[in-house]
Image 1 (cartoon, one colour):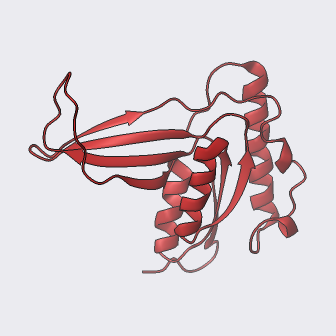
Image 2: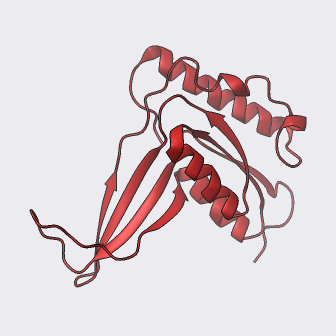
Amino acid sequence: MQIKGRGARRLKFTINPAVDISTSVPVVQPAHKLRCEEVRRDPGGGGINVARVAMRLGADVLAAFTVGGPIGDHLKDLVKQEGIRSLTIPIRNDTREDFAVVETETGQQYRFVLPGPVPTETDGAPVSNVSPLSMPGRASWSQVGACRRACRTISTRASSRRCALAT
């Protein structure tokens, strides 16, 4: 199935992305070491997840997302492995991780969403001069504008120190 027609090119921006870690155990028990099965790591966060699905459906997608520290570097690699064009916005603090554990005996899933990074006032600044020519592939000015607005949001939230970034 392909997405066709006007507007098939999509920009998906994720302010608070994550590396999603998943595994399974036979039974979840308190106060015991739980020996996990094989671990899987996937790129995550609302916009990245939408970009992954849209690309599989044939859309021309550009994923823009914040990255920080070694976890952010790993996230960039995971997105690249998915074949998604991306624009990354460096931030000072580490990109978050989330993890999910499936209890195989019951099929129950336990999800743990870790807090995202607290933005600094300089986070997002490198994107203020972005133009379509500097973005991967054939970006449009509306995509550039969306990235600039998102970076202003990062900067505003950092200066107000209200809370960590929302997904």
